[in-house]
Length: 151
Image 1 (tube, rainbow, N blue to C red):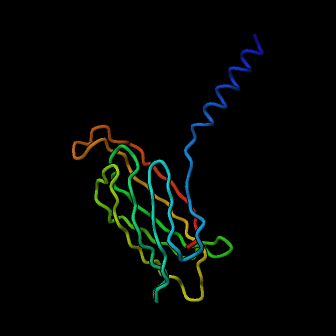
Image 2 (tube, rainbow, N blue to C red; image 1 turned 30 degrees about the horizontal axis):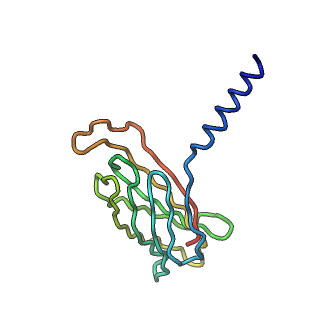
Image 3 (spheres, helix red, strand yellow; image 1 turned 180 degrees about the vertical axis):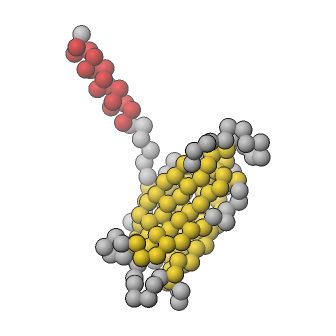
């Protein structure tokens, strides 16, 4: 009896471990086109040096079956040691982002004098909505994610 319980527990643990979503992040060098894919969001971007700092521009795509509401994308620029040297946010997305829809973003992050950035740490937050504007099935808690990539 104990053997069967152990077998059943191990079986359940191994089958549930196989249902984990996989994050897809490219390994392109800095200042090349980049992409990130997960079950909820896809981010495609490119970084450019400017006189003010670093410009991050690209698109965000809703990969959920629901509308995303109040999407916000934050970028933290990191130096070689992983210390945050600058940060900026972009929240000028439409209030509701439909399933499968892509929206552009552009974010200029000013760098303090004498600093250089090697990587970017993106974080995103949104709320789920079944369909606008009725707010049926609206989530009462935010959904979020993050990833780190070369610039």
